[in-house]
Image (cartoon, rainbow over all chains, first blue to last red; front, top):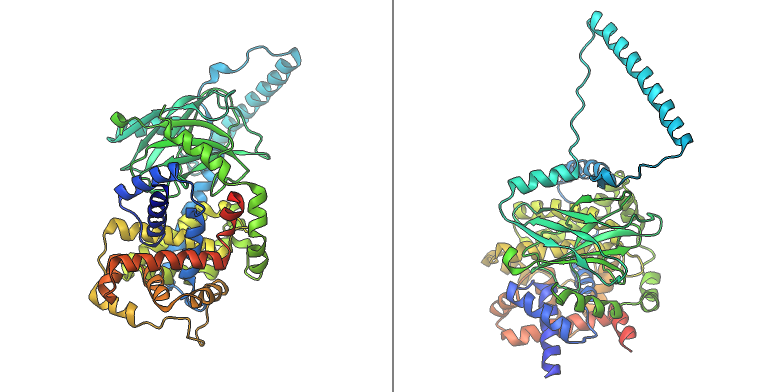
Length: 279
Length: 218
């Protein structure tokens, strides 16, 4: 019986890397992977197929110039977005801040306040002078929308939102609250956390994984990495590397800085399973 | 809480170990040292200038894979743009101890291309199928300038039985489904599947990608 299952698992793995699987086959594969212990894994087969695919590629082959230009334009967008998202964590619950402060702390704030007043007076006078001499109107500063505000806008606009609450991972001393919201149509979603500890970014980062119907459960979709630098409730936008279809669960792991391609899943901070009724 | 993901996580944790990983893949990283490895690291570090180098190094590879597998120029162009975004997003996950940058890039590209073929439910046209069948098998074409990884894979393919090699090339290189291969060359579907599976596993062993799982389970 086990041999039959292992044979079937191998068939599905090979089909997966050569032509892909139907949703039913993917479900079957996921089930077999949890019950059959096979020495063959998907990642090694994917690398093998990739190596075979390169065997017919000429080293002097070039893509069309207009396509290169299009990709470079997308690079501008991608890196601009990446820079904007570099600090993706926004504190939305300022009530958690401590209110007690030593006297020298207050003195520091008082000095800063005086400096701000002086700066404001200076700016006011400068602008008055500008208006008097007919100088052009300053460029308006674009409004910055926080992830928490984006989440609200997303919830108001999306019609197919699924929601799942965070539950415990394999770190027994850590209980994280909050939820995940995700729209398959928009391929957009947000993570909301309470009690997620701040991380030492030189040691590790947090990484999201999306388990869906299109991917092997061994290699869920990478949902992006993020760091936490504040207490209280935080909201993080999901940055899925691939299109997710039929999301079943979400997991947060702790990984080396920069994230990983395949998680060893040694430190699972939180798990959120989508209940059938919300999918 | 659904218990399924937890069970998978426990199994995964026992499946990979860093020590085994390093031992198993030492020979791979040593063998592939001639290939430039720094482009993806630079992209992962946010160095946008590296995109030009990435396009120069891997543009032809990705374009070639997309053209062969999709066989429609418009679809291929769309796919190539999406693949490069995937590459930038996944650049930080590249691990030089597991594979070369070229193989990693090809892996990311194939994931996207298979996805596109599957969800578009593309049926290959008679003309393009003919192209795939009459194209030289590759292993005997000494004049063709190929990538370093490609030459290694070509050698591995050369060790397979001819029918295994043909099935793998039609499947992996040209993106034909097993049923399409069966229809095209008149081979029973079950035989196509068997050749595809045995050939893939054999190449995996020859290229050294199977060592990790073996050492972990030994």
